[in-house]
Image 1 (tube, rainbow, N blue to C red):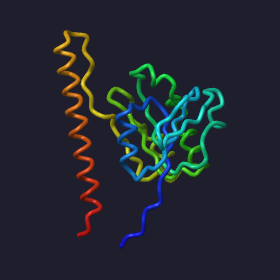
Image 2 (image 1 turned 135 degrees about the vertical axis):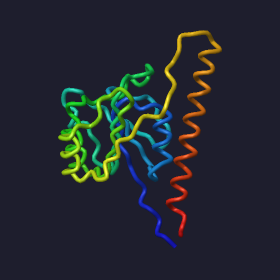
Image 3 (image 1 turned 90 degrees about the horizontal axis):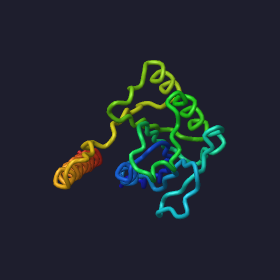
Image 4 (image 1 turned 30 degrees about the horizontal axis):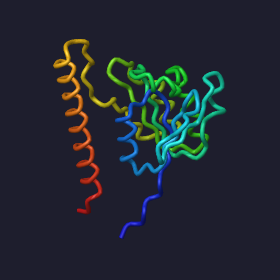
Length: 182
């Protein structure tokens, strides 16, 4: 019998969608999530907290208990995502260093299509911090929103839901296959 895995705590920075946060909660045995925000939320769902970060002195607002970090780079798509603290790309290495100093041992950088991939210097610096393997994840596949007729908008939404569902099924099968004894 395998010993129970230690519950994990993740810190999330950037414009993370609800679907990506749901994926995070169900993946990596994450028990608790701290969102880095620019203002405090009035209510948070169970298992989620917020930490208010001042964009000018962001190091002071970083939590100390997290062991996993997700950094999302990309545009804000919904109004509610505007409350989430979005680190500048030029601060990636210094943010990763500060998180590592606070106990973070695994890091994922989510770069949606159209965002510049990690350069050699960024990869080298992150690897030196011990973030290995660094997984450059892509954002959840999506269909570009359309301003067309309601049937076109409905079709785009349905395709997006189908893509997200297929990705979640694929990820859960891969996790199940990894944990299945030989």
